[in-house]
Amino acid sequence: MYRRLFKPRHKLMWETARKLAPAGRGGDPHRPPLRVMLHCCGSIRALLPDLIDAGLEAVNPVQISTAGMEASGLKKDFGRDIVLWGGGCDTQTVLRSGTPAQVREHVRRQVGAMTADGGFVFQQVHNILAGVPPANIVAMFDAVRA
Image (cartoon, rainbow, N blue to C red; front, side):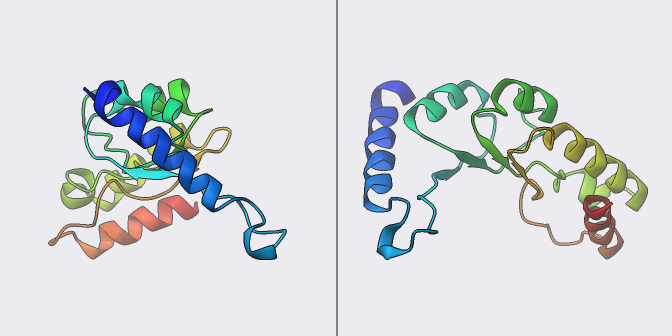
């Protein structure tokens, strides 16, 4: 269904946007070209080849708790072709229910798997939920800075 109904429209929309916002637009030679990012939750691994082919350059979030969305596999299979914007910390389970030490270890593991050769922007999977211990939020950011 994606290939038939959405992919051709995504490709056209993203190509048109790039033509309307090329590098150097507005007379500024340092202005970069428009980049295309899509917010798409869940297990999207099967869609990634088609999204990339249609012109997608970054995806957010990277919902690592869903099927096929483990960090190391995504990075290995798609890390050369797309920026993974998110997936740095599971906000639904680890950040909410883990100890600060568990959060730090989880974030270090995620960042380690995602940063090789670039193409990763640290962000947690989703917004930080209510009731998350402040110490866990501090632990998440401390682990990223380490």
